[in-house]
Length: 342
Picture 1 (cartoon, rainbow, N blue to C red):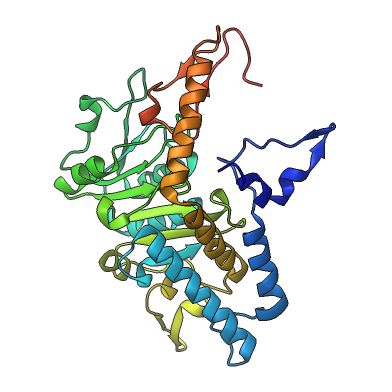
Picture 2 (picture 1 turned 120 degrees about the horizontal axis):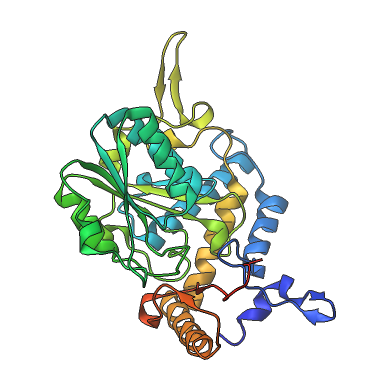
């Protein structure tokens, strides 16, 4: 890990006569040379609209786009590339599920259960579903250390149709018991939607082992480019959903008064696609796998342990959430006694 910094050209930038140290990775990561060069190579040698033409550049762009999807499939261990949908970010992925799956199916008396600590994209989204359908949004609250209580987990009951939660909380940086919550959702007939924005860059992801019904993550948080994200969904569920957006490559045939839609995953990828983003995501995945996801996780665990031990010694800076290094990754949340967060 000692030589990784040299892969990121922006980290050679100086500000106020000091070399940049960048801590804002939860918002977006910087890009290594390998990702930057992949985008430049596409634009210099293969730029075309994928799946939209018979000329060589369109074909080459299409091949690169398809190769990126296969790279994602392997990275998250999806069963098929039909289950990998390219979107702009985690937020769009969750909105797709809300609009195309939840709104047509939920009704008055149904429940959606989420933790109170969810990111706005996994909270406001479900508020609107409930407003439109009459379903109820029920929150799982947390104890002093950020854990779910048995009382709150019991809110996942036979009225629950959707359980949505982050694999790693963006508020606390705490790892959640993903498989246990997914199993709890399935035990009452609900589907499980996992926000992987803050987990996918930090640890191995296996959607089949999780058994989640949907999984969403963003490329720009894992060394890829902006406006790149992925929605994984189980094929049987995706096949029964209406498209989120209409037009372009998601269409099979159009008549004057009716349209049939393309097969998966193209049914959910309307319009011209972000082939630069897909290529960048492929390069980012290769980069992370070359480092080794186990190595990344172990290195971050050591950094987190070191930081927690040091911060515990500083007075007047209470740590919010668990201080058990085994439960956290990447984010440590604090407040300052008597001080405004700004």
